[in-house]
Amino acid sequence: MPVGTDPPLPRTLLSADVDALPTGVGGDLGREYRLLRDIVEGGTAAVAVLDTRLRYVYVNPHMARINGVPVREHLGRTLTEVMPGVERPVDVPLAVLRDGRPRDVVVSGSMGTGVHRVRREWQCTYHRRYDERGEVIGLVAVGVEVTEPRRYVTELERAHGRMAMVHAATLRIGTTLDLERTCRELVDFAVRDLADGASVDLVVEDGPPGPPPGGVVRLRRAVVSRSPELDRRLGRPPVLGEVNEHGPASPVRRVLERGRPLLTTVPGRRPPGLRGPYADRLAEYRAAGIHSGLVVPLTTDSRSVGVLAMVRAGSSPAFTVEDGVVAQELAGRASRALERARHYAREHTMALELQRALLSEPTLPHPDLETASRYLPADDSAVVGGDWYDSLALPQGRNLLVIGDVMGHGVEAAVAMSHYRSMLRALASSSGLPLHEMLHAADRMIAASGFDRVATCLLALGDPATDTISYANAGHLPPLRITPEGHVELVPLPAGPPLGTGLGAYETVTRPGVPGGTLLLYTDGLVERRDEDIDTSLSRLTDLRLPPGGDLDEILDGILAHAATGSVHDDIALLAARARGV
Picture 1 (cartoon, rainbow, N blue to C red):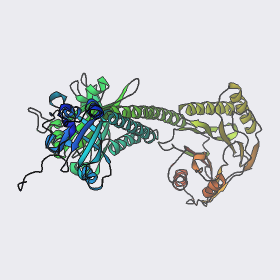
Picture 2 (spheres, one colour):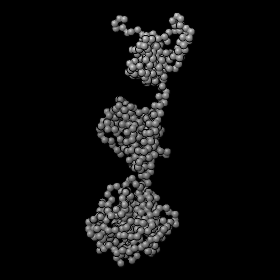
Picture 3 (cartoon, rainbow, N blue to C red):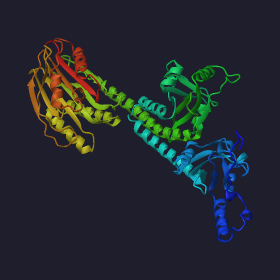
Picture 4 (tube, one colour):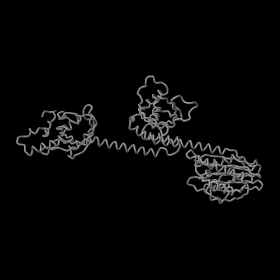
């Protein structure tokens, strides 16, 4: 054989016609040959015979149809030469040639011709082939198409991934009733799993003065989240709180009206005639490498809440329709959380305004008694409660101080507080009952009415004629005496059941007055702490040392500064009283 020429291809009997069988070969052997050829060339498996240089020696018709290349054009050429678009690990067949151990491999790539050229995947098995002397002369490859099964498995994995993502979003978004925090949780989740940057714009219900132009929707930029790389590329921090107007031609407006996601691409060049802030924003996006966008409506069953806008930049792939489906499911979960947060915010504001209005009503004691009060609402994470205080001037120069706390929170608790307050005012002004009978009457009236909001309450009646203070307690915390020197002491009192239980059994206790000192009534938000015993909390309160001789406002500010440090989990109401001229 001349130097530099390829060795001749070994012949394979399968490629010959039955009439070309050697003379004398027939009968059973001929029938077996026909049977073997029918199996190899009539089935749906792709069969190929390769020499030791991985060149085709034989391919069956099914493989030729798949490849879109005639049988003869395979012979003498490798897979890469016949179909350069097919990916096949060459080291696998070479390893089979070396050690003879059959191996499986997945072959994938574009096969066919013209419009029939599609991407397919095949599970192929390689076996070593020997001649009559036992010499290795090549390989036999048998392939079965697995495109559809693998596509089904891939789609199933993607569906499971989407379900897992939505489930994770349910646990991570809407963990509180705070609107801004819910928006923050949404964009942070989106940047972690879906995008390089995300923002939430909320529909403005009470925007700038004057109605917006016809067909314009106002949205406020609530939160923005970016990946570290995108944040570095954009440079400047995001602007929050700005209100943008979106007219009928705005993509955001169309998203809100249609209720469907919108896929966008950032153009490589500035569109002709485009001017203004939007053109500047596009230039900024291009400079940061942002190339793809996805805008998703945030809607509930009854209204539009806003939009979630996401972008991808750099090497991240462009958004797909499938991403839009996932984002829409995510936005649906988040919208419900945002609507709950909006509803809570409205209720919290309403209850707080109602309670402040009730507490701000003038309650003037006799001129010989000086009073001061404070009301500190809980953190935004808790709904306003039903704390109240009152001071009433009674006959014979007596003064009645009242403080109470209705069970529960929200508008209902604030309304219940107003009922309790009005009832005790009426009983104190008209009945002339002792304190314990006053509480007993209020308890009976509330229980008989079916009102389901019980309340703790403490009454303190000061009598300047005897220089005494009488108390009656319905499940409330004991009051404090603050001496002229600034020491804080508890006034121990028997405690009856809360009002509204119908159990009665209250007691009036009379104690000496507080000459030159201050009497402080308070609600449990001042002292109660999570995972702390109430006796420990009260002891911490009595450890306070206040400036001697301070006025009532200074005393209340000092108590709040020292005892109400950190996060406030419940409302705090304080009422301080001191006799004038002592």
